[in-house]
Image 1 (cartoon, rainbow, N blue to C red):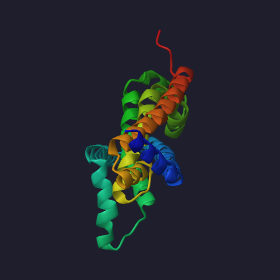
Image 2 (tube, rainbow, N blue to C red):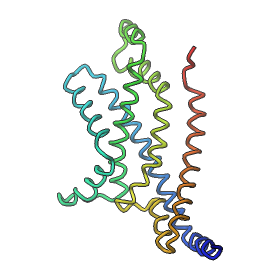
Image 3 (cartoon, rainbow, N blue to C red):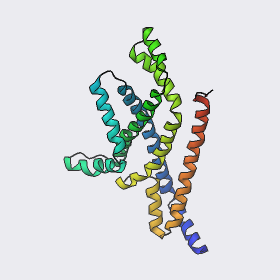
Image 4 (cartoon, helix red, strand yellow):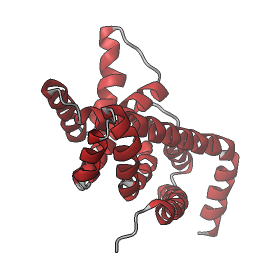
Length: 223
């Protein structure tokens, strides 16, 4: 047993530079898709409030489609399917586009749910005072739905971090992919995957702590 642990530790130290590079790739992807998914989600949410029925229906279809489609299917479709049509994208680009479309749909749904709970008299009063629709959205609607959506949005960030592990299936060399390589060199799968789980748990715990700090600062107290 001691020998197997010493062998695992030796291999771990030897591959540490690659593992740290993979961890960096994981964090980079998680941050990028969280930001792009949030920004696109806000835009999609804005379009759900359009007075144009065709736009609303198209956006609602977008949300339903990407929430309903398994993310891995979307990534495979882009990475392995598009080359048959002459479109070749690198793994990082595929991951960013695929995750962004998926995450934006979820974020827009969270924001729309929060909007449905707003007191609409505020919006009506703003319109009566001559506020343009874009001003009502920017100054009244968006700030309030963002505040009440903080728990859902931060949970989505946590989900983004964990879900990034599936990108090894499209050849993106993130943290999980490097840990798999470590496991395959010494066949110490339990130890490698246990360490992987502990690292993800640590990362998620950090995100949770930051999220709780944000929630305490911005959430509207309920009287």
